[in-house]
Image (cartoon, rainbow, N blue to C red):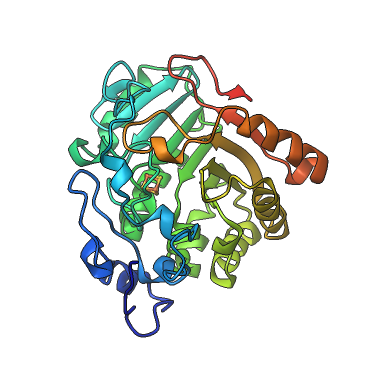
Amino acid sequence: MPSIDLPPNPRRADWRWQLRHALRAQDFGLAENPAWPCRVTPYYASLADLSDPADPIARQFLPDPRELEPDGFGPDPFGEDGPAAVAPGVKQRFPDRVLAQVSLACAANCRHCTRRGLLGRARAARLGDLLGALEARPGVREVLLSGGDPLLLPDEALLRWVEALDALPRLDAIRLCTRTPATLPMRWTRPLVRRLARCRRLWVQTQFNHPRELTPEAVEACARLVERGIPVSNQSVLLRGVNDEPAVMAALCAKLQRARVRPYYVFVCDPVAGIGHFRTAPGAAAALRGYLLSHLGGLACPRVVADVPGAAHKRDV
Ligand code: SF4
């Protein structure tokens, strides 16, 4: 059973300290998976109960030997390194939006990450390439700043991206796709939020997967955004052994609503190599959808969807 002595005060409210003290597989006495190394902030690791081999938080950051077993899936089912790549780090899968991978690092390397096989060899986007791609695509109305995690950039670098996009009146929305509200909530300092909030078309899209992730720190980070007028929505991933009990997902949605975070999607776990053991049995997503519909009001009830390779849009389960 993995164990660790966390650094003193692992929930320290200093995001740079958290990243400097990020923990690796050897810190937990585990073998590293060189293809997708373990990396986690002391804060997020402190939410796990490492005495429980089935802990739903630990499962999201500790390497699992099943990742190395063949599962019949490839590393890039959505062609992000193929047809969807319009410039290094700039992707387009849908006509009205483009995605820029502005950082290749994350506060925690999620074991279930869809891009786990791609990030190691990816190149971060350059602003000039993104602006060129937008000029050539007048139908694009939304830009997703993603990664990796854009919140791993220093403030000034992140603000450069947001302010450059904010200067384009044709865009309807700029989405910041980040898991830091769950894994590094202290990243959302008041000065950063104040400056981001000058952009009135900014949305934050995050990923909480389990009710225990909604700590007071996480709720405070979301409140700072919402109170400055930045909408926050949540996209969970349906993960076997983490949140596939319908009552757990319902509790998560209720806590998100209380935190004024819109439960937007629950994604069926993608068909990506190395994460097959997280995929739920056929029928589980539909059963979950039925449960959520009958236990939650519309504002707390997310759409349960699958991202299907080659499909024109996300498909409701
Ligand atoms: S934060 Fe997002 S990009 Fe980073 S490892 Fe997790 S799922 Fe992947």
